[in-house]
Image 1 (cartoon, one colour):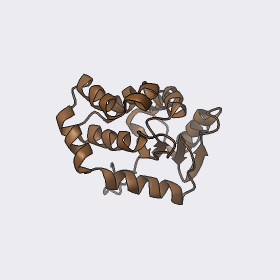
Image 2 (spheres, rainbow, N blue to C red):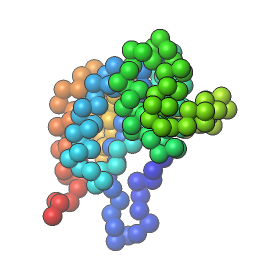
Image 3 (cartoon, one colour):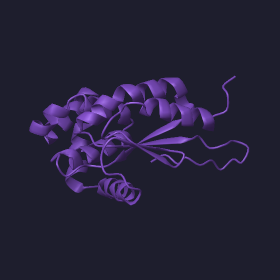
Length: 176
């Protein structure tokens, strides 16, 4: 995961928007439009981090989180995440086969992803994210955390993008 702090005191750390998500969640798929708009508005000035929160009711969410970590490691994190979220319905019926298919479509080494899913190299990241989410009160997805404020999108996305932008605008210096 990317560190949001900077070792250079003259350069302030980028603000971070943590997005607690799971890749079999239709609400997370619906939130993509807002995330794209936030990414477009702020670019590299705001770090958007995927945080895993697989829900027990979605049987392929845990393996999808591990696959996302492998895609991140291979430099295709967000393209993979968006492609899987676009096919949440299929993930429920096709599981790991769909994840490997999406990886191959994006030019991700699907064999390496398959190996990662077998050897469990990303389990600790997924488990740590989920534990941290539970510790701060995340109970559904998507949930956002920016500047210490938790915004729950699991019930409704209405108004959340505006609230995220309001907080980000407060944290970020004016762009010249």
